[in-house]
Image (cartoon, rainbow, N blue to C red):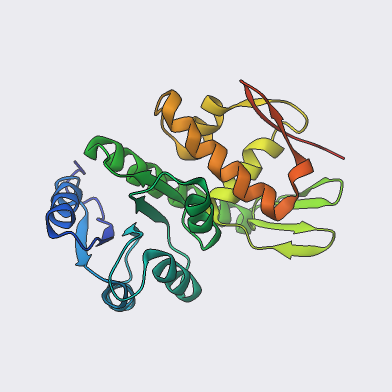
Amino acid sequence: MPQPGTPTTTVLVVEDEPLINQAVGDRMRAEGHTVVSAYDGPGAVAAFQEHRPDLVVLDVMLPGFDGLEVCRRIQQQRPVPVLMLTARDDEADVLVGLGVGADDYLTKPFRMRELVARVAALLRRVERAQQLVRESAERPQGVLELGALRIDAGARRTWLHGEELHLTPTEFDLLGALAAVPGQVRTRERLLADVWGWDGGAGATRTVDSHVKALRAKIGPERVRTVHGVGYALETR
């Protein structure tokens, strides 16, 4: 629970099942967040425009139009962390969600405690990213160059062969964690702690794998080396 005087964040919960929507909303309120609810695609976009939430918990299957379209539309308006809820643990569906701007995902049924941990981790990462931008304005940082890949940590911008890449906040943080030790292997557990800010156990490392696949699609599969049973390394060539 937040301390008195602590600024609250607004969480938009988009879920067409009323019981799930209420349960998630009640838990978010118990954690000290202001909650706005929506039950379909058009309502979600309208609520996003009206209330300008700090984070969106978004179900994939919705009436009107689905969560993927919601995510695409709201990210075009203003970047915001999105935690997607999906009834199918299908890798293709997950990658599509990450591709339209989702930062993380949970497969139904999920434990409410895990949902709370994911939301908290996403909000911490946003706060950390904002702090980095403020620090870079005061103290300009250098650009890291790894072959054709250029990374500006302060400005949170990335280029490949001179063309700017459009990475989600999670993809940028993942790339930054790998680039911090180029050529060296980072375990999935270490990446989960550094990028997501939580220890979800062995099963949660699948989140890392899904985001690595999404990152590879943008920077090239050959630039992230898999060390089977251990983790990943960013190639420097």
